Length: 278
Image (cartoon, rainbow, N blue to C red):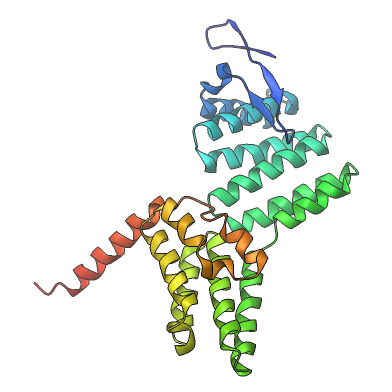
């Protein structure tokens, strides 16, 4: 593949297909300015007095290049948007398979930046595109990837309430810990923290081994310590939970936790300022 550079010379870019069909670009394109690529692509898709038809073929290639360049630069929000545009471009070019793969990439990046509403929508659309090209298994897999974990957490909390009514204290505490882990897997630390605080109102959980495991895990998140999170997730208490919960716990953390420490410090500073009567 070749393109005309800003200096008028022809630049050649090597392209290969990855394991999941996502296009990866060579080192020459990796150094390109993705912002300029997006700007150029956007212009090609907008109609004007001088442009009566959109050039989706050229624009889609530019969107793909920009998406990969953003991802290499770890600009995940921008990469997500670029993959979404690339997916639309492939749809316009009647290539539902490539459109679906780009939509899956956008969904994975949405998960990376914690845009959970977009995660579900993107995977659902990817599934529809896979169905369009007659691929039922990838369509099913895409739907599974887009499952919303808040529903699972709600079910676990209802299970805990039922266990409490039947005096099954151990099962109740395991359900509470499981719900907290599910929220963390969904990269919703605030909800996990709120859930933990609510669960600690139950005396049986407050003095339980499950609470100690949850506290250690949440503390590791508060410190923004990835290694400590992984270590806490491998505790024997967590290992005795349902195998599905154990499996997702082993994948923690699912997103960037470095910002949590700064956020916590800022909140503590605000509290100190509020109490400052001088």
